[in-house]
Image 1 (cartoon, rainbow, N blue to C red):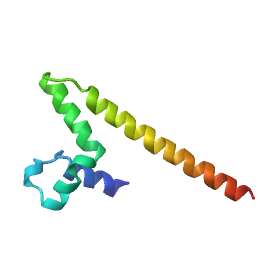
Image 2: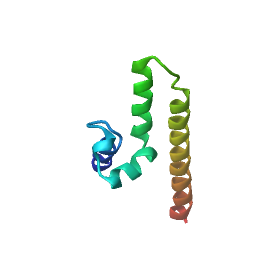
Image 3: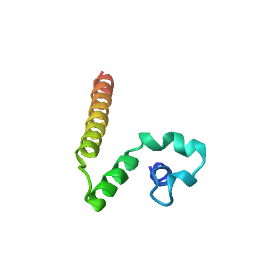
Image 4: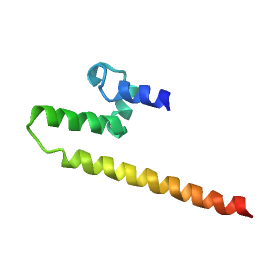
Length: 82
């Protein structure tokens, strides 16, 4: 998990501008949760826009991964009970 967090910081433009990264990191940039969070932070700091889109995407990601986790454990709980 720590490696994933470090990967996200590098890919999301959290440490330096995304334009300075290599093409591989730029390819992952739009799909990481921290990229969306950084975009929302920029919107909040600049007071120039709404963060509803970023919040909706992050809530959707949380819901999708939570449902996936629950489905995984329910499926394996039935298999281990037998």
